[in-house]
Length: 151
Image (cartoon, rainbow, N blue to C red):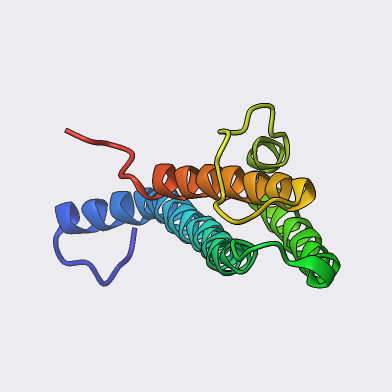
């Protein structure tokens, strides 16, 4: 026992407190590390979801550029931009979730949309593809932003 203690009970209380502080301190440190790791993972996923939202906006603009009448000679340039956008989207979606990336990339069913004034079958196919991809991307973003625990 510590000779500086004048009251025997206080000294025993202090010894018990010191012995208990080590496991409590370790548990508190582990809990604190867990909080920081969860926050870091949340921030990482939020940043990746933000990247998908930005790519969705870019895709909407690109799709709308293709809604004009037949693009004619400009079709190849527009189709090339669409291809680069789909590659960027797939890469970003894969970093977010490989499962979601596959869902965006595999278009087993597309809503048969009409585009007045557009008669080029290749352009119509790309417009339908983009519209379906954008719709699925919007659904993914909405699902991820919805609170997990709704009353």
